[in-house]
Image: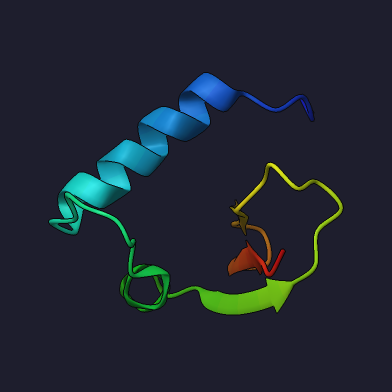
Length: 67
């Protein structure tokens, strides 16, 4: 199993999600996207300040950094 982050693929996937949901401007409605994808929205304090959120498909969660 490859655990190395593929940031280019992540950006491409994120762009596709935005396009499919008709989102063209900030702020991004994360709650609406989570509901549309059937994912639970979790707020947490992440150690990486440059990470706004990540999606854990194995747990069906979107984890949002509270900064």
